[in-house]
Image 1 (cartoon, rainbow over the protein chains, first blue to last red):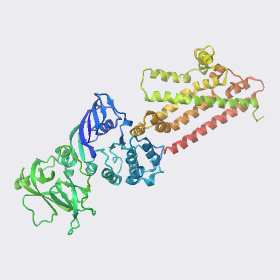
Image 2 (image 1 turned 120 degrees about the horizontal axis):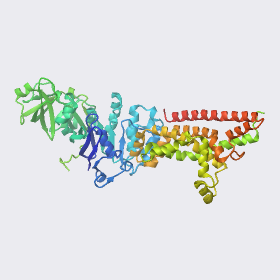
Image 3 (image 1 turned 30 degrees about the horizontal axis):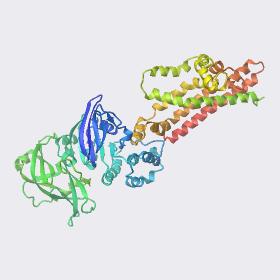
Image 4 (image 1 turned 60 degrees about the vertical axis):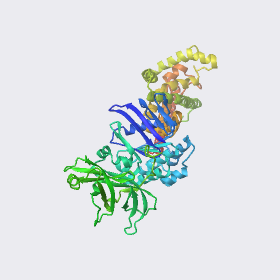
Length: 378
Length: 230
């Protein structure tokens, strides 16, 4: 099942020409700098904006096909939309805002009001009006309202952009819960990589009106185009692993990634829990011998698959080394060019990636259920 | 001397009735015209805008005269109404209501237009994504958000209708008990020798009505703003 989008629209400052094909369910992040056409794209998907040309289909249903003159009206698309500014109806209280959506749902309900209230913790807010809510609460209500319209697809347009850091941290876990407990496909628009990292299963990277690259987030984390956009300090691999259990000696959580295992500081998690770990390239040390007598907790064996010029623009010259650790997972390590020479790092060389457990503090999050990416399995 | 006489009370009741009917009947078309002028683009929009505003710039007597030509028993519309439905507007209170409605229509359209322009289109888009069709959106979102302007427009139009003179006297004449509204009664009282007391009482009534309307409108506006959380 998938969401297929291929649309063109001439805008004042540029031409939007976007095409992508994302698996559903899952969270597709439309990621790119401000003004690259992300919001325009989802407005077209929602039906609020008409493209000059194009096709949009969701699973089996065609929503738009300009060649066949098909354009389902926005109110009939069954697509929920969470706006950056929440857009709660000011003349209604929270309960009535939710009821507004519930009453107009065009599909048999699959999320009940009780479920939404529980998932988003809205029970205590029901009698309030929009202006009596904090920014975070407002967004939670907006998400709940969109869900109660029983959408087939949920669009979120930078829902956290108007919130300060604390409020964002308050809302993010709710979005993770939504992703993991309801299997509703979502498109999440953001220009902040930390949000994408937490939520996405698939990234569509946009640049000046076109798709620069797209793919599963674990693959995209290795993509040079994404690296260029997020800045050198955020460059690193994203690994979705499975919790094996607790390491008795250290109290760290053991997580299987690739064919290896890493130990991470987390709250106690049951075996089998999916965990996403971000390994920043600057925190990874490379060894070409079996590492011994080191304090480092994590040592993953693998094979060097590429040594790229580090395009971070930092002076001194450094390389990004990709190490395949099996099962389709790779780790990125930033090393100085001198080290590359000394260790003779090159494609095909066996290597160990070393990561301090301490440097993974705050870099592990609940991971989404694995989705079937096209081409890998069906 | 202070208590109003029966004919004066009749004039007051007549005025209120005429003004109320003129507002009630012109509100729906005023909303429609305001909506069309704000939200639609079409050929002849400027012309429609000008026609709607015409009563503001024409002498009221001229408006009354045009109404007489159109709605008189021999006029194209008046004749048809008379033959088909037996409705006669000329020299009747229905006619007085029509004349005041035409005169206050531009005021009402203006107030509604401003409130419609202030409605956040984003909220209508939000309603759309929640499954609300065009009419549903208008009734459930646009109209409630326009309410302050709508009320202000209605009250302004009502007050203006109470004071309308020229169009009414030209179109439906000055018949006590039928078309003699408050300003017309005041005018008649001033024409009669010894009518000063009656004129004073009628003037006081007009002031009280006008002031009451303004205060009421302010109270309404405040209440609605509070309801909308602004």
